[in-house]
Image (cartoon, rainbow, N blue to C red):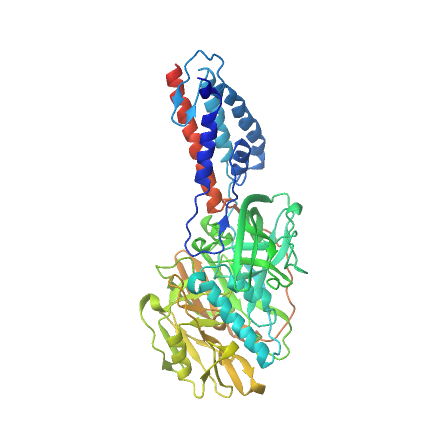
Length: 571
């Protein structure tokens, strides 16, 4: 019975677990996906598999003795002291053992598993926190430069929402970091690591992943503030590949966990991407990455987003995030960086709006986006024909500069503007119209109608100022993405509130003081690390890491069953 004593069963069990680990998550159409490294699985990777789980520092000392004591019992399970004895075969594990070793082996294995599963307690509930934003303001461009910029904006949105690439991550972040002076981006700061270091990141409700440029970045990170994993004592590498595809390139690296702070809130074991390869031009200082504020279903990493970790732990006064976005479009003396408004987590800022907040429920078919039904759209009081149901769903996206919609509806919008004309070449998909024509568009999502300022509808001036380009453009989405993408062209005109429970988006009229401050300039906020009012613990895992943990738990459970079965046979 030598075969029963050489441990073939252990190899078979490890191989089976490896096969389970390489199963794909099956997120159809998602290009920016987390990939698992290949290779076998032995006892050493077992410690790594558990490493991402939340464990208190006080409990870490238990892990090593529990684990290695359990290993000391393994020889008694796979070694045959008396080869004349029969070797009972369990379905996946050949065993010959001394009965007295069984309880010890079983107890130690289960104790090790329990110790690995210890989680941290939550902190007390805070109130709220308001955070200043930065925006990048416009500069003068000639007609050729405007054409190239507009073409790029359209391609970015198509990459993010259109065709086979509809759920690639992350065209909106590209709007920020590439188009530095396009009056199109809003970003705030967060802090990562122990000790905490602050970074600028775009705030994007159209995606769900957090990522930063790595200090080991080999391309595309020149002059960009980067994250140094070696400087953080709380950093943990998940050894899971991470890749994000953009319209003009990609960023790739690994998934990791660390302490992340933002707007007075902290999440330990937050999963995020650390990217060491970035396409040239994808990042420009002072931005180091982006934070996605959409739902987990949209996360290319499979990880729970920062904001949803806070929402699930019930640490907010209200389950909301709110934005007030400033306007500097067509302000001739605007600087490259200007104060951009306020981002609030956990409550609303009543000084920034007036009247009631008109909440509308997120569409039931939402796939991770903040989707509302676009129910009414008028151009200078003339209605545009909108189809019913999902054909008029709109994603509310702070990370998108303009407004994209189905070609038929965009054509109808400009048909109501005298002397408008479709663009050609780099302006394809856009429309021009006489700058002397003031255009007021109003949109509704089932409740109140909200006007878009003519200053926001007028995206750019061409031909010395006589011809303007509109901020609405033709866009064909994929079958899984909303047909309308409503970005900052609209959101600058309202106070917007994204409510996690019940899932809904609300808008309110901006206060007089906010409207008066648009374009006024002022001191530009810098990245800061404030006091933490609440701290929670994230799962510390992406879906793939969670799958690994579940697989190991399953193997331990099977092993325990095998031990008990073998004990019955031996006794």
